Length: 153
Ligand code: 4NP
Image (cartoon, rainbow, N blue to C red):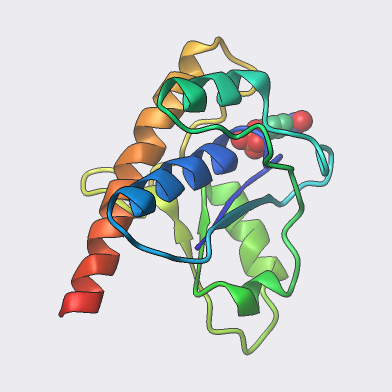
Protein backbone atom coordinates (compact mmCIF):
# COMPACT_ATOMS: atom_id res chain seq x y z
CA UNK A 1 0.00 0.00 0.00
CA UNK A 2 1.69 3.23 -1.14
CA UNK A 3 0.29 6.62 -0.09
CA UNK A 4 1.23 9.56 -2.29
CA UNK A 5 1.08 13.35 -1.95
CA UNK A 6 3.18 16.18 -3.36
CA UNK A 7 6.01 16.65 -0.87
CA UNK A 8 5.83 13.43 1.22
CA UNK A 9 6.22 15.51 4.38
CA UNK A 10 2.60 16.22 5.41
CA UNK A 11 -0.36 14.22 4.08
CA UNK A 12 1.11 10.95 2.83
CA UNK A 13 3.31 10.31 5.89
CA UNK A 14 0.20 10.89 8.03
CA UNK A 15 -1.74 8.42 5.86
CA UNK A 16 1.13 5.93 6.21
CA UNK A 17 1.22 6.42 9.99
CA UNK A 18 -2.56 6.06 10.39
CA UNK A 19 -2.65 2.93 8.26
CA UNK A 20 0.35 1.38 10.04
CA UNK A 21 -1.40 1.97 13.37
CA UNK A 22 -4.64 0.49 12.02
CA UNK A 23 -2.82 -2.62 10.73
CA UNK A 24 -0.94 -3.08 14.00
CA UNK A 25 -4.22 -2.90 15.96
CA UNK A 26 -5.79 -5.55 13.71
CA UNK A 27 -2.79 -7.85 13.30
CA UNK A 28 -2.34 -7.19 9.57
CA UNK A 29 1.16 -7.32 8.11
CA UNK A 30 1.36 -5.44 4.81
CA UNK A 31 3.96 -3.59 2.76
CA UNK A 32 3.19 0.06 3.62
CA UNK A 33 5.07 3.19 2.53
CA UNK A 34 4.53 6.75 1.35
CA UNK A 35 6.14 8.92 -1.31
CA UNK A 36 5.80 12.28 -3.06
CA UNK A 37 5.41 13.16 -6.71
CA UNK A 38 7.73 16.14 -6.12
CA UNK A 39 11.41 16.02 -5.11
CA UNK A 40 11.83 19.21 -3.01
CA UNK A 41 11.85 17.43 0.33
CA UNK A 42 13.61 14.15 -0.52
CA UNK A 43 15.52 12.91 2.55
CA UNK A 44 13.69 15.24 4.95
CA UNK A 45 11.68 14.05 7.96
CA UNK A 46 7.95 14.88 8.00
CA UNK A 47 6.87 18.47 8.76
CA UNK A 48 7.12 19.13 12.53
CA UNK A 49 3.39 19.91 12.69
CA UNK A 50 2.55 16.56 11.07
CA UNK A 51 4.91 14.76 13.47
CA UNK A 52 3.27 16.47 16.45
CA UNK A 53 -0.24 15.45 15.38
CA UNK A 54 0.80 11.83 14.76
CA UNK A 55 2.65 11.66 18.08
CA UNK A 56 -0.43 13.03 19.84
CA UNK A 57 -2.26 10.00 18.42
CA UNK A 58 0.48 7.60 19.46
CA UNK A 59 2.50 7.30 16.25
CA UNK A 60 6.15 8.39 16.09
CA UNK A 61 7.14 9.49 12.55
CA UNK A 62 10.58 10.92 13.47
CA UNK A 63 12.40 8.23 11.46
CA UNK A 64 10.31 8.68 8.28
CA UNK A 65 12.20 10.23 5.36
CA UNK A 66 10.63 11.74 2.26
CA UNK A 67 11.22 10.07 -1.06
CA UNK A 68 9.92 10.49 -4.60
CA UNK A 69 7.67 7.99 -6.37
CA UNK A 70 9.63 5.74 -8.72
CA UNK A 71 8.67 3.37 -11.52
CA UNK A 72 9.46 0.31 -9.36
CA UNK A 73 6.71 1.35 -6.93
CA UNK A 74 4.09 0.32 -9.48
CA UNK A 75 5.44 -3.23 -9.34
CA UNK A 76 6.08 -3.31 -5.60
CA UNK A 77 2.61 -2.10 -4.55
CA UNK A 78 -0.80 -3.46 -5.52
CA UNK A 79 -2.44 -0.16 -4.52
CA UNK A 80 -1.12 3.36 -4.98
CA UNK A 81 -3.41 5.90 -3.34
CA UNK A 82 -3.18 9.63 -4.04
CA UNK A 83 -4.20 12.38 -1.62
CA UNK A 84 -5.61 14.58 -4.39
CA UNK A 85 -6.55 14.70 -8.04
CA UNK A 86 -3.35 16.48 -9.18
CA UNK A 87 -1.18 13.78 -7.67
CA UNK A 88 -3.41 11.06 -9.13
CA UNK A 89 -2.88 12.57 -12.60
CA UNK A 90 0.89 12.56 -12.00
CA UNK A 91 0.74 8.91 -10.93
CA UNK A 92 -1.21 7.99 -14.07
CA UNK A 93 1.57 9.63 -16.12
CA UNK A 94 4.34 7.89 -14.18
CA UNK A 95 2.81 4.39 -14.20
CA UNK A 96 4.74 2.19 -16.64
CA UNK A 97 2.51 0.54 -19.24
CA UNK A 98 1.60 -3.02 -18.34
CA UNK A 99 1.72 -2.44 -14.57
CA UNK A 100 -1.33 -3.82 -12.82
CA UNK A 101 -1.22 -1.59 -9.73
CA UNK A 102 -4.53 -0.01 -8.80
CA UNK A 103 -4.35 3.81 -8.71
CA UNK A 104 -7.01 5.83 -6.94
CA UNK A 105 -7.88 8.64 -4.57
CA UNK A 106 -7.53 7.83 -0.87
CA UNK A 107 -10.89 9.35 0.03
CA UNK A 108 -12.68 7.25 -2.61
CA UNK A 109 -12.51 4.58 0.11
CA UNK A 110 -14.66 6.62 2.49
CA UNK A 111 -18.42 6.55 1.83
CA UNK A 112 -19.66 10.10 1.29
CA UNK A 113 -16.15 11.41 0.48
CA UNK A 114 -15.69 9.85 -2.97
CA UNK A 115 -13.80 12.14 -5.33
CA UNK A 116 -12.66 14.43 -2.50
CA UNK A 117 -9.07 15.47 -1.85
CA UNK A 118 -7.18 15.41 1.42
CA UNK A 119 -6.59 19.17 1.68
CA UNK A 120 -2.92 20.25 1.75
CA UNK A 121 -2.26 21.61 5.27
CA UNK A 122 1.29 22.82 4.47
CA UNK A 123 0.58 26.53 4.07
CA UNK A 124 -2.25 26.74 6.61
CA UNK A 125 -2.62 26.85 10.41
CA UNK A 126 -1.78 23.87 12.59
CA UNK A 127 -5.47 22.92 12.84
CA UNK A 128 -5.26 21.79 9.23
CA UNK A 129 -3.00 18.93 10.29
CA UNK A 130 -5.58 17.73 12.80
CA UNK A 131 -8.15 17.70 10.00
CA UNK A 132 -5.71 15.73 7.83
CA UNK A 133 -5.34 13.19 10.64
CA UNK A 134 -9.11 12.77 10.87
CA UNK A 135 -9.36 12.23 7.09
CA UNK A 136 -6.49 9.75 6.80
CA UNK A 137 -7.73 7.88 9.88
CA UNK A 138 -11.19 7.43 8.34
CA UNK A 139 -9.59 6.17 5.15
CA UNK A 140 -7.22 3.85 7.04
CA UNK A 141 -10.17 2.21 8.83
CA UNK A 142 -12.12 1.84 5.57
CA UNK A 143 -9.08 0.34 3.83
CA UNK A 144 -8.46 -2.12 6.67
CA UNK A 145 -12.12 -3.18 6.60
CA UNK A 146 -11.97 -3.80 2.86
CA UNK A 147 -8.77 -5.81 3.15
CA UNK A 148 -10.16 -7.99 5.95
CA UNK A 149 -13.38 -8.48 3.98
CA UNK A 150 -11.45 -9.50 0.87
CA UNK A 151 -9.32 -11.95 2.88
CA UNK A 152 -12.29 -13.53 4.64
CA UNK A 153 -14.70 -13.49 1.67
P1 4NP B 1 2.38 17.35 1.25
O1 4NP B 1 2.48 18.92 1.53
O2 4NP B 1 2.24 17.19 -0.24
O3 4NP B 1 1.14 16.96 1.98
O4 4NP B 1 3.65 16.75 1.80
C1 4NP B 1 3.38 19.75 0.87
C2 4NP B 1 4.64 19.91 1.39
C3 4NP B 1 5.54 20.75 0.76
C4 4NP B 1 5.16 21.44 -0.38
C5 4NP B 1 3.89 21.27 -0.89
C6 4NP B 1 3.01 20.42 -0.26
N1 4NP B 1 6.04 22.32 -0.99
O5 4NP B 1 5.68 22.96 -1.99
O6 4NP B 1 7.20 22.43 -0.57
